[in-house]
Each structure stands twice: as structure tokens, then as C-alpha cells.
Length: 489
Picture 1 (cartoon, rainbow, N blue to C red):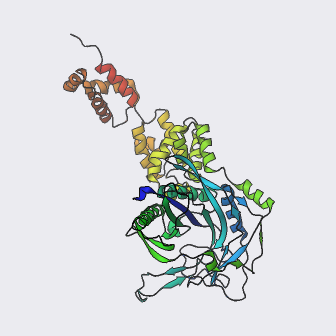
Picture 2: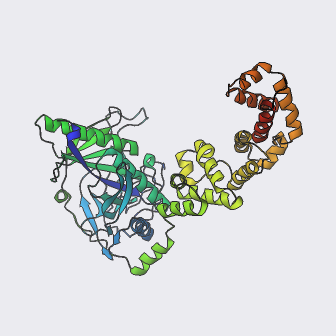
Picture 3: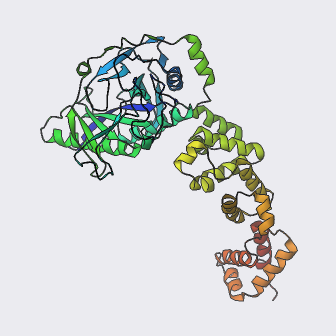
């Protein structure tokens, strides 16, 4: 048998860091890249006798994600202690939620080759992060066999978003994560930066023969630090399990690590069960009560969600669904488009075309998420306006855009300064066309003999003679008149 004879069953556990200024249960600041162990206090270090206090903003941000995903919010939820020993867990337990989470249900819709598919969520619960164990470092005075611990992350507020096992391929998992990351960024609950650890994913993968309904043995994959790695790890793990079953070897329930260098997984440890963590309600934290007023307040603060915003852009501005989807890659990017349209409402399609081609090509993913287009929205609108009114050609506009980015100047200032105004005078262009035609009798004969491609050559010669400033439409009209005129004879 081969992998094509099996069906993959995949569920994802996504840990998402919330955009709070302080930690989940203490006042230490949440700062990425700070000096090791500089953002800690007796609470997050687990000193005896200290008491945690719930960060209200952590709960509000979690509610934003849960409501945006269509979850049911529990009016009362409970924090629990998840007990295990590890050097970067100073308390010896992690504060999390277990049998009474903040939110349940809901889901996200992904696009597959077979059409749209709804991926159900099991739950969204609150928890704190652990610290970070480091096994590689640049300092010569530290033994290569040593491990160091940085507890700055200990106590950082997270939500864990757990999906049902509804995904069936690495591609579906990739699409789901792209949508989920966009959602948490869209509602401004997290920056979603996987490279900074703000979004981390574990994948639970099993396979079963097609047509069966019983779930196979589940393997958890960790160390997935990019969405692309999630896709490749799932594909590798499904193939590994299929090969094992085909050889008569059972799949072992375990946790495996993804190794990007070899594009393989390797065993890490046997898979823990919930009973191994000895969960019990945290006696230092009371029941978390979320009132209806609190939920309504958060719901009112939510922006129009991505799919609705895309449909609105398409409807109001006559855009294709594909362009509207691209413009809603991030909320700030969609805002930048609408701001540009407000300065030049006559041509939203033209503004969208420039944003999604020349502008987008000059932006990093971080720029897109922040809506940092390389020129002010009003200058982009002005650029499109000058194309529309014939002041410049599309070719000149591309040159002008580069100058706008380099100098920060407006299109109008640069058009005047660089002498880039398009030539539309038919008398002046007519003289240029006549000279080009008279100087190239062989090309004229070729065109009149049926070589249609020669016409483009003439257009190029006229544009060259005018430094690219000639209006292409006028040039085409005048060349047609000159080349197609009846011949004397």
C-alpha cells in the first residue's frame, strides 16, 4: 500500500501570545529580546508566599479572539495547575485551564480544492508561558554541554486554540494557520510573529485507511516554528506512519520533534496523558467570571472581520473577490487602500492594482501586517490620478514610484522637477512619427507586407525618440494613420 491508500487526520494546538504590556499574573513587562532574566519578579519566579493576580486585559484579548471565531463564552471558567518538572518552569507547575475553559466551539473556514471547509474548534483557554531553556550560545566561557535558562517568558499570557481533528492534509493545516494568524492580528490580540515565539503550533497527526472511521494512533509533533514547517512536518509524519503500517509495525503514541535541516521527525518522549499532569484548580485564583456586559463591550469593540470586510470592499469598489481577499491580508493594509481611495475615489480599481502589484512587491510581510506601504496613501492616490488624467504614462509612473520611495516627494513635485510630464501634443508627436516612418522604409514595407509585429517596433522607436514621455494612445493613433494611409501609385 502507499500513502494514497490512507487518510490523514490532523488537529492543531496553537499557542498564541497576547499583546499585553504585563504578564498574566504579575506586573512584570512583556518585552521581546530583553537581557536574560531581567523581566522577572517573585511571582513569576514562583517564590513561596506570593499570590498571582489575573491580568484583566489578557482576558479581554482572549475574548476578542473567541468572539471573532464564533466561540461560546463560559460565564465562569477555572484556572488549574498543570504539574510537571522542567528547569524553565520555576513553580513546578503551569497555570492553565483544564476542564472549564474560557471558550468552546466556533471555528474557521478554509479554502480547499474541493471547496470551502469549516474547521471546528474544541476550545480556547488561557494559560501562562514557561521560560526558555537554551542549549546553544555564543559565549566561549560556557561549556557546550551546558544548558542555561532565561525566565523572561515565564508568566507571559497565552491562549491555546485547539482544533478538532478536521484537517486532512498539510495544505489544509497551512491554510488554517494562515487564516488563524490573520484573525488574531486582525482583532489586535496578538502580533502573531512565529519567529519571536508569539505563535507556536503543535500538530497531532494520525492516519487511517480510507473509508474507515476509527481514529489511528496519534503522534504529536513539536518544534514547528513556521507555517511552512507545519505543512512539511505533517506530510512527512503521515508518510512515516504509512510506511510503518505497511511494514507491519504499529504506530507508537509519542511526541516527536521536527528537524528542519533533515526535513524529518525524531522521537522526543512518550506522549503524556492528562492524568500525568495531575491537574487541580489553582487555590490562589478564584473562578474567572465573565459578565454579559463584559462580553458585549468586547463584541462592540471588534472591527469588521476579514471575510465581511473583503465582501464590503468588493461590493463598494467593484473589485474582484481575489483582489478583495488580497487587500484584506491585514487590517492595516485594507485601511491603507481605503485611505488612498478617499483621496482619489474615481478609480479604486486602479489604486488596488498598484497596491497589489508594484507596491506589494516592495513590502515585507511585517510591512503588510502593519500597513506600512512605502509611500503615503495620498501620494499613491495622486500617482494613479496623474495616470488617469494623462499627465504621465504607466511606464513613467513606475519610474516615478521609485523616485517617490527614495525621496519622499509627491508625484506632482517630481513630475515638475524631473520633467516627466507626458507629451500629448499631436502636432509635436506627429512630426516625430513622420520622421521615424520616413527613416525606416524597410520596416514600413515589412509592416505593409503583413508583418504585424513591426508596428510594435515603430511604437518603441517613437517612445525612444521622446524619452518615453509620449502618450502611448496618441502614438498608436498617429502611427496607424501614417502606416495604413493609402499609397500613391
